Image 1 (cartoon, rainbow, N blue to C red):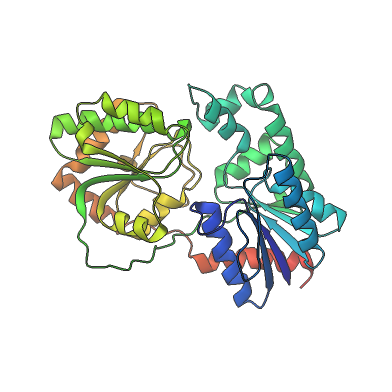
Image 2 (tube, rainbow, N blue to C red):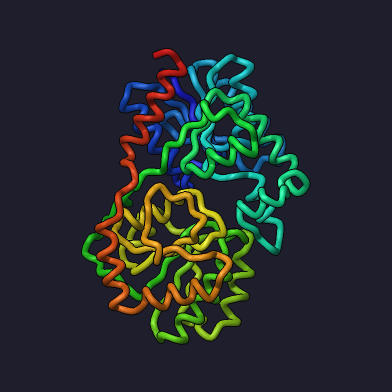
Length: 372
């Protein structure tokens, strides 16, 4: 098969779609597929075509479409990593040349865009139960619905997304495939490090729905009551300045560190050197960061609306709207006895599917669509 992978980001860019695109490319090539990647950024050697990010909006996406069109000429299928930014140009190229299109959506664009612009973020359930998608984000809603309707198949990493796109976007459930994010253990160059069990770690985008200001205030409460703990936030985004301002208002500000994004290798080392990882977002869609932490045998705390492909102990889940509940959970896990209990619980967790299983499922879907 000849596969084109359309993605907005690709290594050395950080993020789940970049990691997935690279890993999927390597797997497909191991199956004797010919793979070309189209992404934003500089072109790389070895079949990665880049579209410069400095191009203005609109022109940048038109050039991306031309790249997709040229690649589709010599491809059987386009595999795109979202339903809008790269999904729309990939869809047009695929339909013009009658190529198969598979869309992988790891979240919900309409909900994310509204949360990025508002000062009062809401969860996915709140967003759709109040029907805000019809009047706050109609363009993103209809664009996503259009791309997914015309796609030959849709892949989602969480069952909650399959339910969403079936019930709210009216996509045929028979063409939506739930292939969970696998547990990918990051590669460590230094395995001699010892974990600082007092370090609480978050890594990801600094956007409103990630609920990071609530995490910081909850940590401040837990720190003042227990006298233990260090909170490290790794990432960047539009909420960075707000988070810096929140930090200055807290009594525990000297125990809170906000870092810019680091390499995948450095992040793996930081996970290894931390005690517990946190996913505080109002809604999570089977997040890669949490799965990586579990794969490295780290206890986690995550909001109850998470879509994880693994079942966690109830005491690791919290109401993302309750600052006091999160503070209590943090205080408990900072206690050495409770922490040891959490380590023991790790052995009872049934792991997520392996990367090979997930990739094989995607490869089999491609083969079926292309008639191989």
